[in-house]
Image (cartoon, rainbow, N blue to C red; front, side):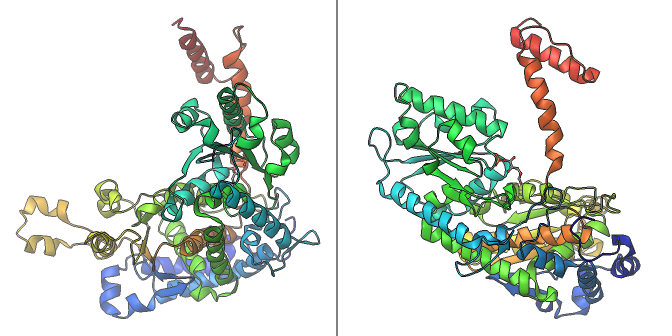
Length: 551
Ligand code: G6Q
């Protein structure tokens, strides 16, 4: 294997894995109800705390022995060396020959992280300072639009990693944002996304951020060109207007200049920042514009606190490691195919959507770093909704369906918007869900309520459904940063044990290539010669006819 220093045994040949397989047969029938009854301290013992978060993992299908073996698996899988390699700037993204250094984006000024012989931390802070200066100017009204009006609207154009983090962070930290400003996010190449985002905006007061690491992404470039046309239309075609209404975030200065954006108004980042790990880089410019430089830096401090915890805490007390191992245990041994992330915090409404990319693009791989097929399932499917909304929707399946769906409950003890009894009601619901999932309701308990015999089976809750609960004091920029970093490193932990490349995304390429060919076939005046499968050929022909109204 390229770049590998230590040889790790294939997953199923590792002692801890084999021991876990034997152990699983012994514990698969254990009931959480019994585990709690037999060990009154379980709920206090199986907890850990770091960077403002309290993790209760006692409601997982584990015993002390399970935990011991999982921690052994982490050691045997070389997790410690992997973590050190990431933080040390090694090129652990081997299929793209890149370092993986989102942790450098939140490293304090005095830190040193060396890539290819260069300490990258000063460069990170130079860009942060440039962003802060720009954000101060826009927020104070010093930076004005082409006709001298103050900028009040910011539209981020980007997709995937250049969109999901910024939207999620904007929503999460809206409480701290400048409410005089409007923020919109355009990602989809569906023209509706752009049209709806700008329909009520005044070009004279609107700033576009073209966010694209490569500055070649089809969707983003298409939307950026439409935005340029929209701006020009607002200023009678005066091309000088572009400089006041467009800035770019990219690693590709040449393409930015070619698009017509002055590179003085470009905020850079580097190839060692993966798209889905880029929200702390200049890709977070919209976040900084919304919440201001000081809050943005507080968010980075939160990320950094969790980074330091992940890097240095013993695995037995390491939140991302514990969460990664527990997810893997339920996935690989109990066959759980999904994980539900359930924030009882309205501001985190986009967090599950953000996590879909973070988790599934990172660990949705079937080949390990040595090129062989992984001998077990890799990333579970992550999904979720804020509580309590989800309770009135898909929780039915979590409680009484046929599958195990491990849940992560997330909440803050103080509401940012205290309102009567709301917060107690919210949190009571979250605690109740965890309890109901773990403990369930037995046949005897249902019968004791006088339920008719025929109805009893429908009202029984088997329980034994695993969950984690994460609690923090309140949703601040800092706790938010720690939360995101917690999931980043949770993903890292799982990927390291499967020995997969968590930082590439070759799986998104094929569809992109095929689409390029099909775009021409849809647009061509002449009937194109089609050489796809018969279904695709037929669909293309049908679409062409419908478009022309000739069907
Ligand atoms: C993330 C992926 C992907 C990427 C988008 C946008 O890890 O690489 O989601 O962020 O494809 O790419 P650009 O920023 O280059 O436009």
